[in-house]
Length: 110
Length: 116
Image 1 (cartoon, each protein chain N blue to C red):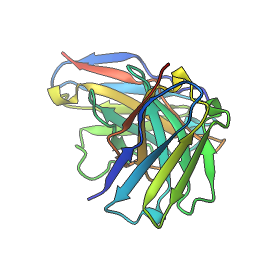
Image 2 (image 1 turned 90 degrees about the horizontal axis):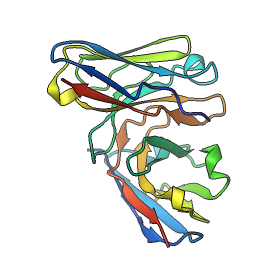
Image 3 (image 1 turned 120 degrees about the vertical axis):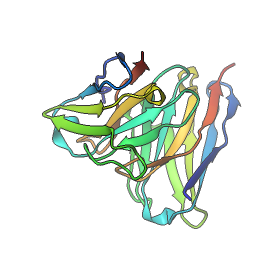
């Protein structure tokens, strides 16, 4: 159960778009549609932003979108806003019927 | 509204046991699988375990090596995590999260500190 690989940090200016990658294997990200993305502000619980690769829960801004190609999933945030500055984590179901998270990415809005 | 409230955390010595609880409300608890996820101080999220809606299927992170047991009481709308042989490295905030495939709602977490 190795953690999924995410960049440690990304940054962007207000109004720009950024993409966070999440790389796994064919036994997790590449093999299943159960890839999710979470936003976590300091001291707070994680919040679901994307589920099943590209679906958005009600109430989540359509500036957030998800996709997957092969063993890599991606979260794109368009029209970057100051409030988007946070930590982001991906997760995936695995072939062992378990779950695995990415190491997390710190998004800085410049 | 959906609520998940964890409890049972605290300071415990290495080698001792602790049982965490997660009280659910605002949804039909017995219809959903539920997870435990932990986060060590300053670190990322680590998946711990999941239990199916009826309690018959349970899966654990390999790193736990049989020390933790997940269970649920659907009559009490409560999820549990029995943690045995605790180690310093088990120090973390422990969250419960609803839905087997979505993790769509999370509790606020309970802090477990393992220290002598």
